[in-house]
Length: 202
Image 1 (cartoon, rainbow, N blue to C red):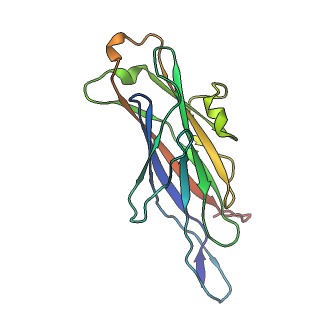
Image 2 (cartoon, rainbow, N blue to C red; image 1 turned 120 degrees about the horizontal axis):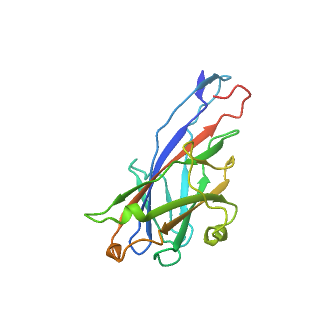
């Protein structure tokens, strides 16, 4: 009898900066590896990753029950203006009910910033991120940095464990008045990967 040993989930975080509004989307893609197991009863397990908005407390799973992507509004704190920043974040929780060890890591990839309509705001937007131990750290400007090409990786999450990703959106100090009232969409890939917990990996 062989059982699944590894799973992978992927999500997209899309943030629309209109009076400081973020939107989170999530989808799952499952991967598997196998290992020999003793005969017995086999039960299905779920790989659930919960997302909670830092400022509003709104919560959703990365995917809905019907398998479609979920949306979660992350309302940043502050007003975006030239030379200023707004911040928000998401708490990501490993809610799997699988037996045994089921550690995961979460990775946020580089953002893509796109103008809404015929605006030009995107070229003046700067997006930085950081992981945090507390949601209050999202409102602190320290520790933020651009996401590297390899992405921003969370600490290892055991079952029931959580990590926090904070996002900071800044408007360049030289932004012209013509961008006032415009909007952009910021898209960040979010990936959850199971760590097998065996010496040889998955």
